[in-house]
Length: 312
Image 1 (cartoon, rainbow, N blue to C red):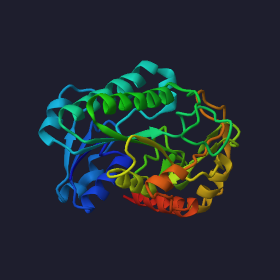
Image 2: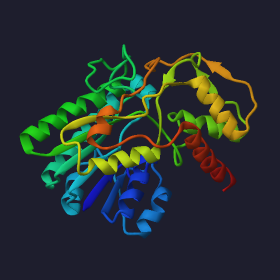
Image 3: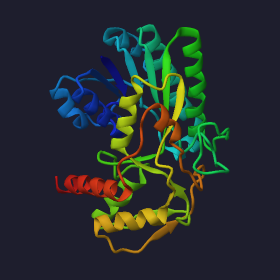
């Protein structure tokens, strides 16, 4: 079928494009290339995928989707940095709310049947009282980023009820893997490995006891592929249900990188959670999805990719 992926040249989006092309779908990627990279899509474009360089806030999105006429839209384009959202909530809302609505409206008008969204399982629930957190938990986000992601769920419900545009929300844990930017502000696995393999000293913000749920990008891609035909009108946590604290992650990355440097600490940053892990039992029941990549194997996979990039 015809599928359009926003943020399709980015870390997660490009892996999804690769999977869809391999499965024989007719795929268009949409990306502003502000953080996404054309190089991520070279293989997919050689096999017929198309890349449209455009910001999701641009009004030309309507014309573009009318021409592409996708049956399914996978929406991953976003402002993803919690700290940016805290510093500039208006920018975060402009991209993640107004930009998403621009794409959502264009998808409806182009006759798409389904809209699959990447949400944030690490931010929409706030600081849960019980872990792993279920989708039924009614927490309050602690950052503008979490707010902008959570409000989109309600807009999706409106578009489904008012216009018949089906949706599935995938609330992602902390995603890591090849193509994640080791010099960026988000993505601690890639940042740790990038610094360690370059002989630099990474920084842990806070005491390192804060926990996250780390899920490999290959498992995320599998969830998106399964959501094409399942999960109507439903929010799914996509994680491992396992808490890993940052000090444990540091040790795992140091082993993979052969790094023996000391840990450097800096003050904790505003808007960051203390603990999170996602219950994925709903995804197991309704999407037949479970995470397959272990953390050690996933970190080794990511370290190999970072090494290759440093040699290039």
